[in-house]
Image 1 (cartoon, rainbow, N blue to C red):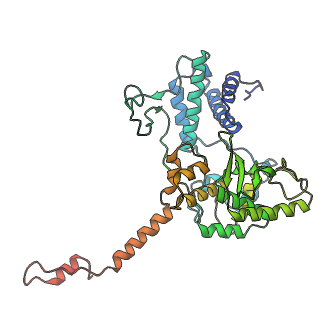
Image 2: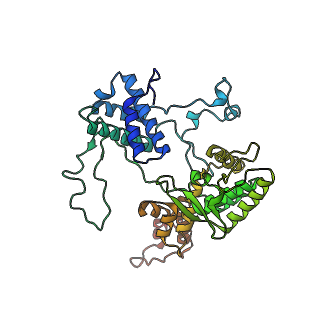
Image 3: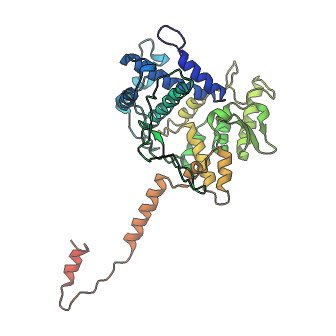
Length: 395
């Protein structure tokens, strides 16, 4: 990270070197650096040095993130002053569309404000940054982002029952509460429609592998040709967090589409070899397929449907399909997805919003179809029409 004069910010560089020594991925280092950059810019605007920051500055930074807009990077198509295709079609500004719910998927459009997850991530990064410098003796005497010790006195998880999971009794004082979100899956009819609109065997093979293996997008895109074993019906991927290699089972049709794609691309002169990338561009010069290109492909296939599913939703769909199979243990699903905690995998056993609504509507229909209950008059000579009016059987 560089300051306004183009000089490396040494406190941040030392912290990132510590994270790199702990074998954290490049994506994690980048996300930590972005939060530190946001904090450094806020300190510059407030006129406070990073060593002079106190919990008052940490509190004000948390308040600022609740009301401020996220920094937006100018798209390369608009750097010359021209609007992109979305604005030319009159779709409105990003601020006016923020919070709009897609009628097909039920997902809200990303807001221009910082989400609770982004604010929680920034609070965690900055608290760890100052803890690192407090331990090294190069920072302030107190952490601007302290932990909240008022929730429970004494040591965290004191008298813990080993048969129960650990409770999060110590969290950051300015850390927001995160809602529990049930992962959204793509319904089978919508997935089939999206799959039918794909134009190339490569794209069909990609979606078939994503929706059957549950691998993350980058994990599958980083595969090479030697990672595929059609005989054993598995593909080798490198996990995002641990960087460990793992064999994942895939559906038979995924290998069929893969073979059709390989025969087609090899005839065009694409590189062939065990260490060559498995997924490449369809045009010369052949280059490894990147995540932005794959995301654009998936978005184009959804234009007619009007949905806004993401590639990561394919992982949720695969997890939900496996978790709903009564003959597949939930621990096997956890191993395939690479979850460290079983509680994360168990989220896919919960019913989705569409299922709950369908069950409730069916309940109301069954109640409506039930025969009316006959009520005996409480006394002789009582007018039955009074009870009919009371129970709404007549107007």
